[in-house]
Length: 330
Image (cartoon, rainbow, N blue to C red):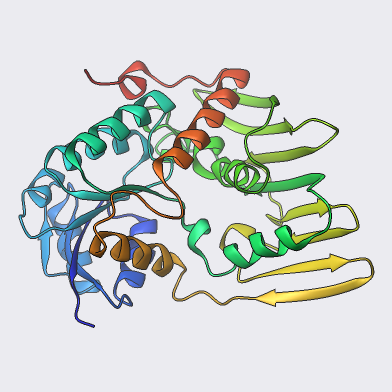
């Protein structure tokens, strides 16, 4: 199959490197253009990842009429305005998570995308990894409902005021960067909770850690957490009566999960292609070729539900970003 979808990539950081590597593995997608506010950097990425074009500004890339879809990999605070610019130009978008800073921004994006008839999806790549659908099928095969879920994402970092992770102007902190993954898993597997109880710590405008209990009634719960000051194995555990599932170290990018029923253990392996971004890339390619305006696996309603729960957690720990990145355009 020939390369039929021209991709542009905005924001050339660590994630963009892995994404571009996997885009070069695509059956359908073409690494057409890369865009940065630094033309030298864009030219470096153009050479490394065999792009057709390099642009020294985001707007100049978006003016290229041959772009079919854009991947936004900028800091969080830039997602919303760039989404608007893409949508206004009628360009399909895959936007790195979190797709916006708050739910109100995302509701605005949903309306704009519907009005323009363009494809928009949040790049929650875990949902598209080969292990994820077999995981859901295995859970559904259990005799009893889920009683508890535990998911975490932690790593150690040193405070650096110049890092996006510690910059409130870029919507930094643990929740938006890595805490989104455990919250996503709880919602995908158990749905939206009846209540949320959260503890966390905000310093210099960003959260360093949070821990939430999602209450589903009848003693059923999910415990989700993230921390950028301590390390962990980044595991997930799902308990269903006499059965349980462990997604081992770095569960969000896993190739396997382990099921336990009684005393019987079974390991399920589902190797990913490349770094794993390949799978969401091919999904977007297929959706666009099929004329779809939303993902059949993770649509904007899923993202709105996720963002609403992130907003609730932020409210409980007092995490508020500057007005200029929280506001919604008229």
